[in-house]
Amino acid sequence: MDTTFVAPMGDRGRLVVPAELRARQHWEQGARLLMIETDGGVILVTREQAKSLVRSQLAGKDLVAALLADRRSAAAAEDEVE
View (cartoon, helix red, strand yellow):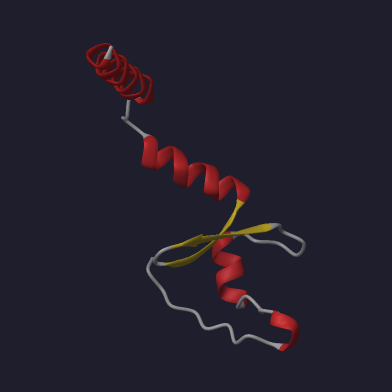
């Protein structure tokens, strides 16, 4: 579903999202969209789409174990200094 759409920048920075894209993304009038700036550009999503994107990026990662390992490593480094 990689499709390119063009939305020229209007006066006062206004963008008109093409109707086909709005329909495909199920964005209705008044939908609140997030603009997430990244090193590679800007991502335009709804809050629910952003949540889904983050969840998919974190899927399968054990964040608690990673945090505990970092804390243990820092504690061991502090013990060596003392």
